[in-house]
Figure (cartoon, rainbow, N blue to C red):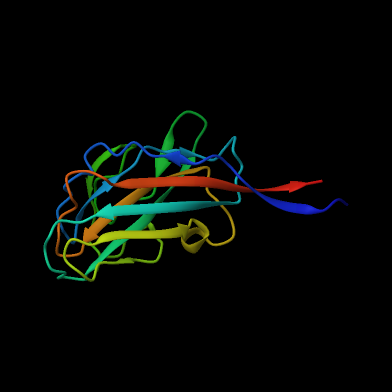
Length: 169
């Protein structure tokens, strides 16, 4: 058997319609369009999150929570995990209200991003495997819950990813 090498796909920035100026809330967040892993067959994804914040002091949980919304394709349509409410998410980009940060839901949470100072640029790198474990779904949405006490700035947000795969040489 040949050597296994980890490979990285291209940097892909998500379309962030409706994410600018996202208010702090325990329930109202934003979701992306579906990231389809059926042909990519990545074993993981690396994410970059950049959120310039308004000039408001930290409050509430002082954090931004990135989630992945697991999805399975049934052969004709995407089926998404629920957010703890009767309203199932759909592909975005756009806003979505889920059950809340303290309510049980079926989203998969990545580690929170800390907001500690007014006017901070919150930036972090996370891996999908921090939420999914050892296997990836057919696809997923990214869901962002801003519960920092401050709104996002009107511009400058970035959510980008690279697929991570294995190559055998």
